Image 1 (cartoon, one colour):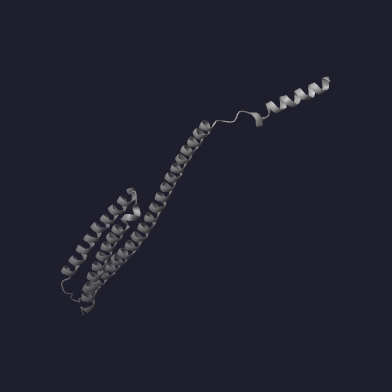
Image 2 (cartoon, rainbow, N blue to C red):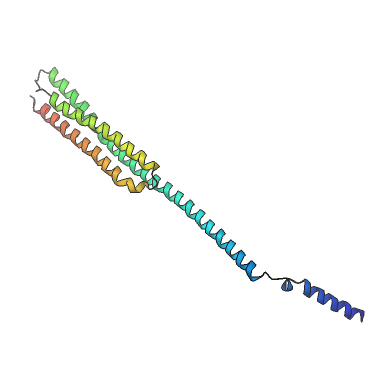
Length: 176
């Protein structure tokens, strides 16, 4: 009999101590926990979105930097080519003058070239300013059209320099 009572008390103790009979949270506690979980989830979502915006902004700035560096490199190559051509032309002019060949006055054509070169330098500075403005902008790609426009202005300056150089070359080559 003692064993039956002992077994019965053991079973009852286990039943009342089991988690199945533990006090379940009330409906209001459940709603509070659910609201807290939703708030935490919203906060986490906001943080993730903010991180993604920052990452995306950095990616866009890297794209702008890449485009600007390519543009600047192309413009520098073309400018260096024109300057090297002018140096070769100056050498030809001195050689022709040393041989006694008369060359008409080139000051007007040189002035056109130098004016275009000065405008190129100022427009290149404006291009750099536009690029710096894009780096601090929230949406740098929205300003990309302005950067392209500034780049086209510099290209136009180089084209004017090239035309002036071609005129110089024609004048020198026609001198005999």
